[in-house]
Structure formats: C-alpha cells, structure tokens
Length: 64
Image (cartoon, rainbow, N blue to C red):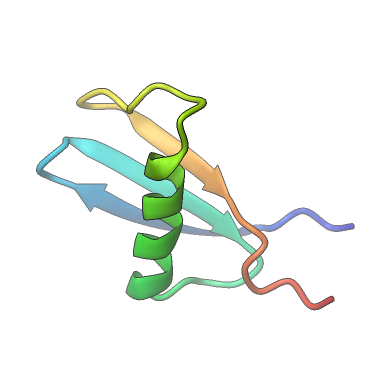
C-alpha cells in the first residue's frame, strides 16, 4: 500500500500549534478540522505544547 503524500497545514493561533495532515489528496478545511479534533480527543498522547508542530497521517482519499 502506498503511503499518503498530500500534506495540508493549518495553524491554531490560540494554542500556538501548527498541524500538518498527510493524506492521499488535499483536504478541505472541514476535513482538516475533523482530523485535528479526532487527534486531540485521543487520550494516549500528551496535548501539543505552544510552538510545536504536529503531523497527523490519515487515510482520507484512499481508494479501496
């Protein structure tokens, strides 16, 4: 299976964090927000600190 290559970025000025979402196609703003919300709702990792860049890999856009 090929790895996703389309990288879409979004800044959160309130938290001071940059999110990079890697997918199989460019994502819309709504899709980015969904991915970031899902990432932040997970309990198995610490919350990102101010100034940090977070990379999230998703399967959005993958043709089954």
